[in-house]
Length: 391
Image 1 (tube, rainbow, N blue to C red):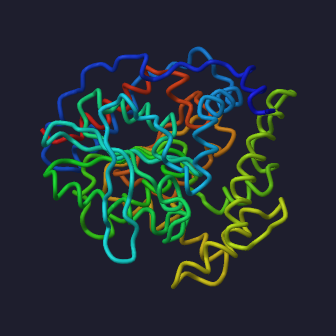
Image 2: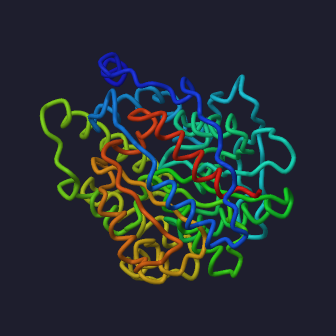
Image 3: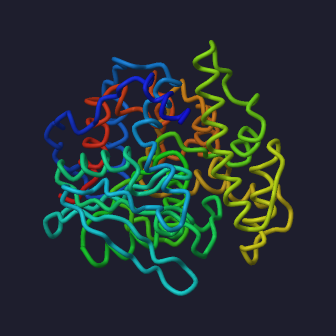
């Protein structure tokens, strides 16, 4: 009841589907992937992005949460997760992508684009799914641009909620996405791109690394765009357990929104701990979840917590400096949940790798870019994936 009352006070955010995208640019002319990546980086970094309307990051969180209130609650329970009918009336249909022995069959929704059209995979944030409102809007926007789109669930999310194999903080999810992209590239014979949001952005960067490490960067030649990714997983876990490490909200309303968000995320995590027969004090929920639930279910992972988190980090040497896939990291300066330092750490670890570029945006909160500048967001998507599509 309190959530519903709070939502009466939430700002109305514009839907990305209220805005028309401009025409796609011609594909980058250079046949070499490195030259195409350079052209796409230059174009995406030069695009205007002008915040307008609602830019308070906490009001953005409140508005987005209230707009998706029913879906987010449904996504926590295995019998309802990933089943909210948010694609009704849109030209999407259910899809399953088998990845092989020991790996999940990825589930989601697929647009019915023209044969040979470029494919873009869209991946949700933590505790969300392929039916989350912001995912549906981005998927439909990309479809309207002419892309073939698949919105997919990650492990223990959406229709995979409560089903093995377990969540692994990107260690295995990145390879899941790479294998899904490889399956599609072979079946469709076209470029495949990847749009990751929040936790999905971290997993998308890991997919770029997996494709590169496997010697198959061409699988993701359609490019990877990662928005608001918690690329330093260790810092993200510490911050969720100790909110003093996050930007401090100002004023009563911001503090109330922030406290409500952390409480909701803690409730979702406690539900998963309870399913595994574990309990944890509020101050150590996330670290306990990884130590007592995730690590024991992943054979071959290090026994020490810091070793596991070190492997899971994208923002470290040996990950971003080894990527050979066109990769663009986007992060608003005012993100209150995953601070922009995650982007900066990843770029520092990339050590000048020309395949990886990042852009700090003036506003957008956490995954709120479409609400802050819808036209700018559509231009970023169309330019990046448009230039990298096959000619």
